[in-house]
Image 1: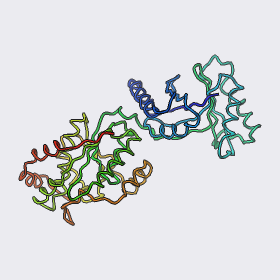
Image 2: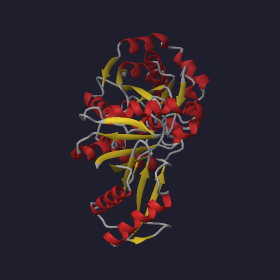
Image 3: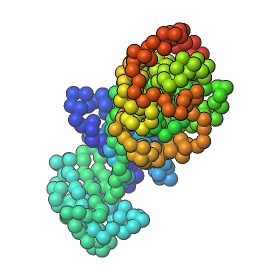
Image 4: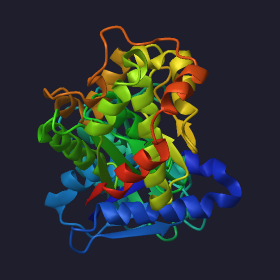
Length: 385
């Protein structure tokens, strides 16, 4: 009996005519995730994705990586068996014996996808269940068991599993187009990026920092956050925009509106980087009402500067919910490291909370905005991952 991993997906099933495209994207992403492990193969067998050929000692790390592949609903470490009832009993007993915590109750879920196999699914369940009951002294509970022993007998593959690891589901990265995320060193934008990755959007990133007033430590934080997101299929490149001098110039026009004009400039520049990357939308970490620039009035005025669709996946989240998600994805500890905030540079203590577009445009006309955007775009530095 050989160790294999059964990969299950759910949302892809509803794609009907496009299901094959989504599944092929998922297969490719799984292969990328396990590429460094020798002899590992990923196959689509009878509607199931099977990972096999790996060394037993690598199973834990492979499972960790696969849990970060969007599109996967669950992972079941299993034993591949011959289509034989005795083999199924032996595999079930072996797997139950290795459980770290002995369950109080169990049931067997059997599936005979190979209808030529002479024993029916209920009979398989009874036979395997009887072996576990008598050999391991675990009570049967067909309603809400603590353990489910899964047995499948198929034409191309047969297996037994006793454990299922929940993954995050979603859609395979790359199946929903390409976006450009405005990534800062804070808590919110990495979570926004993660949520769009989960919806199948591949990403590039653009970050803004403000030398000489803000040091390189803030940039290093963003690079680290990109590396964390890469584990989930995140940004393959990071465009770095040094816009401190532009901020200073805008702040001298009207200090109370400075933050609004900063954000509008950022969207204009990020859109230019998006065009170069082939991105069809911008992604930001804004949450309605969280800070002064994120009132409904200010968000509307800021977004009006973008030539691209602006996606805000955190709009309805509060800070506690965002922090919980940041901890889950592994970005929180990096995000809370002390750093200087570029967006607050040259802004007053009480910025405008209900900006009006006509007044913002009046001040922006006092600078060569197109030239400013071009200069920042032309001087961008790109880091590839």
